[in-house]
Length: 321
Image 1 (cartoon, rainbow, N blue to C red):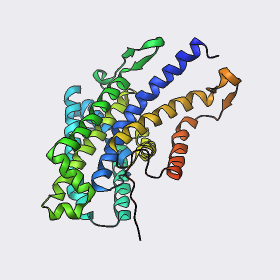
Image 2 (image 1 turned 180 degrees about the vertical axis):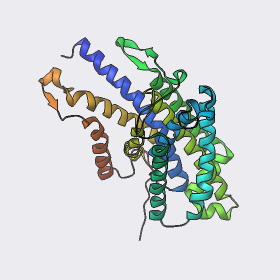
Image 3 (image 1 turned 45 degrees about the vertical axis):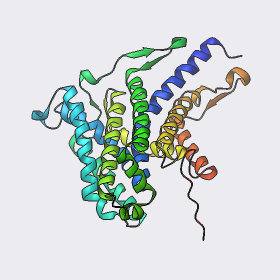
Image 4 (image 1 turned 90 degrees about the vertical axis):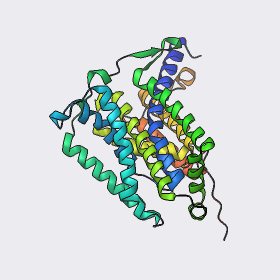
C-alpha cells in the first residue's frame, strides 16, 4: 500500500518532470519545425540553445563586453531579436546553398555549426558557470495540491510551451504562410512549380526555429540561476524527445519532451540510490549509480527507433520499388 507521503513525493517528482520536459519542449519544437519544413536534422540544436542562454550573460551582465550591459528585460528582448536575425542569416548564408544537396552534407554542416557556436561561447566565457542578473533569477514557485510546488522557470516553461505548440498548430493550419510552409514541406518541386518562394518559406522556418530554441536556452539557464556549458548536452536528450514524438510533428515533439523530462526526474530519484517506484509493493532497492536518469531517455530512443521508427505522431513514408 502506497502511503500518503510516498504519493506526495511521487507527485512532486512528476511535477518537476513535466516542468523539465516543458523546458526541453521549447528546444525540441524548434528542432521539429526545421525538420518538418526543410528535412534538415539540425544537430546544432543544443549549441543554439547554449548561445541563447549566454546571450543574456553577454547583454545583461557585461561579462564579456563592459559597455554592452543593458537591463534584464532589454537583454531578453534583444536575445529574441538576435535569435530571429541568426535564423535568417543561417538560412541565407549557410543552408540555402545546400538546398537539393545530399542529406549527409547538411548534417555535417550542422555539426560544424555546433562546434563553432560551442567554441565561440567557450572563448568568450570559459567553462565556468555564469550567473544571471537578479531580475532573471526566478526564486519563486507555484503551490500545487499534495504539498507540491513547481519552480518559477518550470511554470513559465509549461505555459510558454503550451502557447507555442498551440500557436504553431494554428499557424500551419489557418494562415497563408503556414499553408505555404506545409506545401513546401510536402513537395518542394511542386511548390516551386506553383510559384511558391521556397527560399522565403525556409527563411521563415529557420527564424521561427532559432527564436524558439533561443528562448528555450534562456529558460534552461534561468532554471539554474545562470548559464552553463552543460546546456549544449541537451542536444542528444532533445533528439530522443523528437524521435519519440515523431521527427516532423511539432505536437509530437512537445509530448516527447514531456515524457523525456518525466523519465529523467523519475530515473534520477528512484534509480540513483533511491527506492524503486515498486518498493511500497515489493520492497526493492535499486541503485544504478549517478547519471542513470540521463540514460533512460536514450534507452527510450533506442526502443522507439526499433519498434516505431517514425515516432508516435510522425509521418510514415512508404516507398515502393
